[in-house]
Image (cartoon, rainbow, N blue to C red; front, top):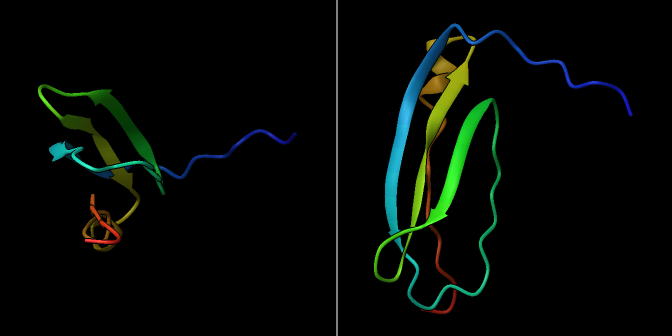
Length: 72
């Protein structure tokens, strides 16, 4: 396997979210540069904390943490 090559991290932003895990049966992540720590939160929640990283501000603005629930 070839080693991963990371793009420079010229700009970054913090991510800190507490998400209700009620009725969640599956959690899918699509991540880019940076890091994200996912942990069981308090009560019935999921805690996501980390730092998003990009080489340009315009790309950083596109990095979000979105929660989609199906079947509600």
